[in-house]
Image 1 (tube, rainbow, N blue to C red):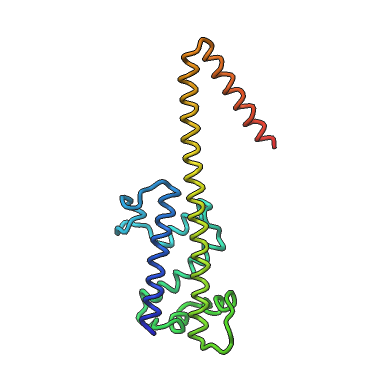
Image 2: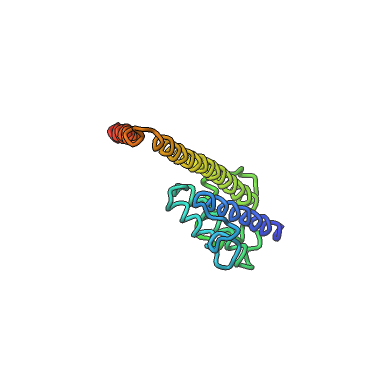
Length: 190
């Protein structure tokens, strides 16, 4: 059971870090394979820093970020503390986190303290998975918007080409830009 708890937490952390790196790569248009900051190289940002970056760019709200940070505290104990043999001993090294998780994710009284902490930690992990799914959804929205912006620029480029070949093409382009400006100004007023 001791190594099983440690292995479960470390495997979960690896999956979370991979997902966070992929999400940041998509949001910031960075290839994670070639990146100094998002790859598996020694120059890579820490998972905590990646979570802070997601918060800074407003992709992850603070409440969700705290769940990742709580997860990281447990991960760090299992990775760096040989005395953290199971969930109960692990949480004994983290001030108040065990009680906080049991408050946020109540467990049945008949369970042992170890079982309660393990199940509460599992529910925390499930919340993190939900956050990751939302973040992946955000990347799909951004990808669509980027594609839409690219398509719009190609439309404008094509309009310029067509209008430049017309007798009054310059005038048509000016009228189109004026109409766009008017619509954008009306959006600002709404």
